[in-house]
Image 1: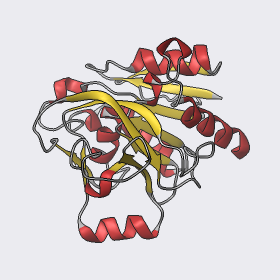
Image 2: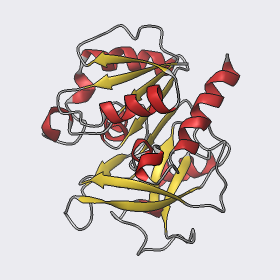
Image 3: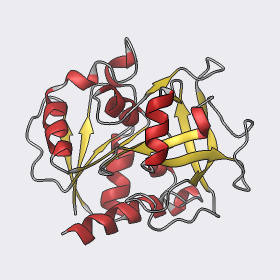
Image 4: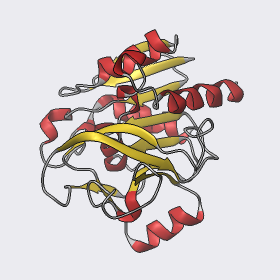
Amino acid sequence: MKFGVVIFPGSNCDHDMTYVLRKILKQEVVELWHKDTELQNCDAIAIPGGFSYGDYLRSGAIAKFSPIMGSIIEFANKGGFVFGVCNGFQILCEAGLLPGTLLHNTNQKFICKNQYIIAENTDSAMTMFVTKEKPLKIPIAHGEGRYYAPDDILSEMIQNNQIIWRYCDENGKLTEKANPNGSLMNIAGICNKEKNVFGMMPHPERAADPELKNTDGLAIFKSIITHLRNKK
């Protein structure tokens, strides 16, 4: 598979994403600068974490106007696979490719720690190799990670199985204490109605190398790769 990793001014997880896809998972990877408009025939587009344009205004609010985003929106609207992590999730929401928005954490602080998440929906491109019974330990690092959507949008998302990941404790229980940022329904990741655009706040690329003593994130990447192969 050929992955395009988008780089904005302020991206700081692009090398992590590229490393995991290229070195750990042996996939072809090209770097896409924010001023590019050509997606180089990629099978999938990854928008990594960081602080695009310094997170001025709102996280992702300026990045959505970059030239590359016009091409990504067109790619996604034609069924192309796009996934965003952390700031990438924020950008996809700002660009209208995913419903809802990411607000400041309820404690108004930047949170950086390991966090357990569990799959709400195992019938998706990101969750083919995970089960609802086994929580994954995936790092988070964000100041604006509190997912919010109006009640009518949230009801539609539930009906369409668009909630993919939820924050939980180490036993998989969905509790208020296990919710690090105050997200509605402990939501950590979602997809669009067509299930080809995905976003999540936790960083699976930071839990995918045996050197880090945690490879829980590999199941997510392997699910994506298998999904893309099955589509070809």
